[in-house]
Image 1 (tube, helix red, strand yellow):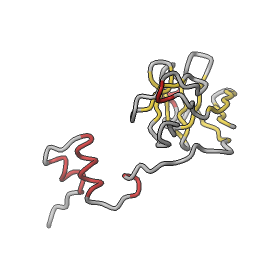
Image 2 (cartoon, rainbow, N blue to C red; image 1 turned 135 degrees about the horizontal axis):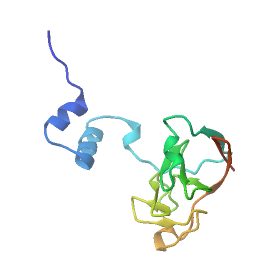
Image 3 (tube, rainbow, N blue to C red; image 1 turned 90 degrees about the vertical axis):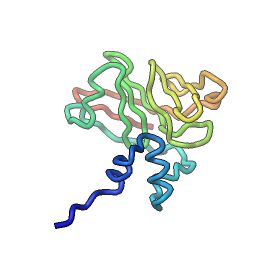
Image 4 (cartoon, rainbow, N blue to C red; image 1 turned 135 degrees about the vertical axis):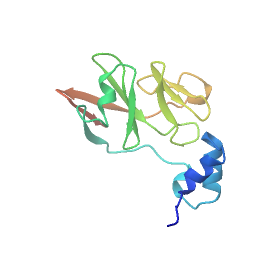
Length: 143
């Protein structure tokens, strides 16, 4: 019987990691997820996360974040959350994460407050922030 290996496992066996693995993988495939095209922030946002599920339980710890529906949701303190679009205003690409108590674009270093206000030149336009409401273990994110 012939053993089959998946493409990404083969590339990893060649010693490729991280960005180089992604570059090779995207270069030889036609996956649209590799193209990182410009996108717009979500509008009409209204969804609820159950913080007891493994997918969202990271939000039970201050300083952690998750990405859901194109929104970066972070636990800012024991009593508060922040939610912003994952789309950076610098080049409209989904590269925003939560880091060091604020939001940060991994592409060009734009930084933002927990309310989406830009705090450096690349983040000067700011980003879309969303409301959050915690009821028991349900966290609602909405426009």
